[in-house]
Amino acid sequence: MLLTIWRHGEAGPGSPDQSRTLTEQGTLDIERGGPAFVAGLQRAGLPLPSLVLFSRWLRTTQTAEGLCRALPGVASDRLEALIPDSDAAGVDDALVDHAGMQAHIVLVSHQPLVTALIDRCLGTRGEVPALAPGAYAVLSTPLVAPGCATLLWWSAPPDYQV
Image (cartoon, rainbow, N blue to C red):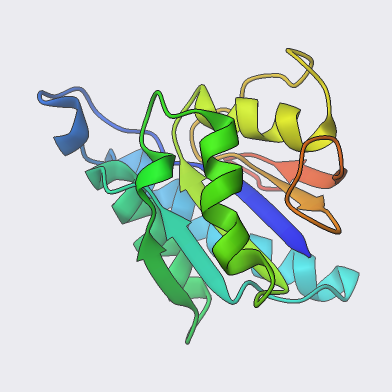
């Protein structure tokens, strides 16, 4: 199974935090990043995502919507475990229901959770650098459990090079 962990695009200031929206740059980054992500997967002969899960907060919802435009027909849904300050182990538990049915899942969430998720999947602790807004990491894992994944690549705006 592939698991892509994507940090929401650049967001502007605002209150309450859950209502912050993507900036113009954040929107542009995701509009560029989605197609570049798809192209990278196709070049590598890897499956496109069949499911995009995201936190209910506005900036992650907007990021997921942008990614879904690059992935016509992909299913998407909110996942409460992806809100800020959630525990990475809780995301594992929530993914168990989805993992067996999907070849590739994208998670769209917040910092520091996205970095903690990558660390957990790789079996490292505090070794993964913080993902920039709009950045993502693609992992290959036989199951959703700590230390079982391998990093395939990561990419970040503005170039999204793979």
